[in-house]
Length: 472
Picture 1 (cartoon, one colour):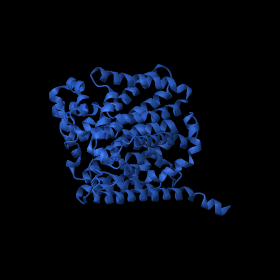
Picture 2: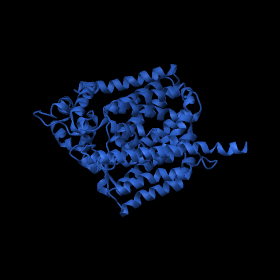
Picture 3: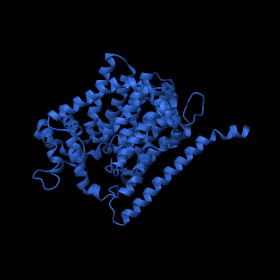
Picture 4: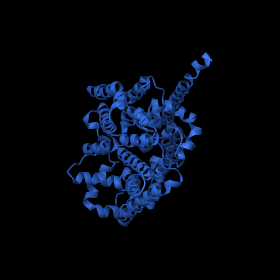
């Protein structure tokens, strides 16, 4: 009996270590395979930091102190504050920490110029801001579809820049409106990415609290506020997509928890946010399982219908408004898929390689603590269905959004349209995996996270920032 009692607590730790070893082997294998393929003339469009996009370059400057100081503060005081701060203050602290962490990591990678700098290339949204401002918003929306493919090869008018053509028109429009307020340039664009992207922390925390209770949300707070995904928040417009999408999911979750007209109005507001997310990225259609899972887990299958219908009305209203202005979402999706398939950046990327490198890049983005927590999902597999039915134990309810997010990234990979760069493209899904770190073993009765896991969670992105120049 004594021997069994001693062995049983080791099993989750052993599973976590095996998961870390498997992830390390996957990432290392993809790095080796990427180098081997590149040496033989295969273009992966990833630079040299396979499986993520960038180049190896040390940044051992004074700016490295910025993320080191933030990491030290989170490691030392984060768990204690997460357990003691009043809930509204915790949400605010999580938001500010996430914003500061993203900025600090960007500074380590190249100083102040690194914030928003990747947004200034000829492939990005800012390359089209002056052109769109000159033609006017109405002409931009009315003619957006024509320049996705027609202008790409053989058209009389230049087609949209790569990222503009690869997304619905709302994301570029945000940068145009930002420039019209006098806040033009990559620095202000990066600030917008940070301001909206950091909203994922209070949004995910609020959703976890709703599903699993405040205790689980507080446990996950340090891992959410200072996550490795922040490497792509100050430098990638995908942070905006993640922030809007996560807020929409949180709002519809709270709408499901209410009753009456207030519930339907809140669900309609969530629909507007989720419709906006669809107009930021076609890939946000894959949020549907996550939205459904959250609403059903809160409300139950039968009572979820009014909330979902009200949310769908909000989504339809946003899509209809843009359709009236000349942009129909389904046409945009079809033409964007056509442009992706005829472009060199897609056709010369070997599908087989990215079937492995995509999950490897996701593992890099979420970090070692989340990877270590993944085996615990398997232990909860028989408890997920009761959680989806509106009941079940808190740990299983915590896992519901994460499982839905994993299904979304699996579908994205199966679509064969996700070939690389998923460390930023999958940000809206990756943020829902971060709360899984709360499942890791505790070291004290006050539910402080194990210091080693938190240290690894914080040290991993600092190591990446210090040794690489990321493309985003």
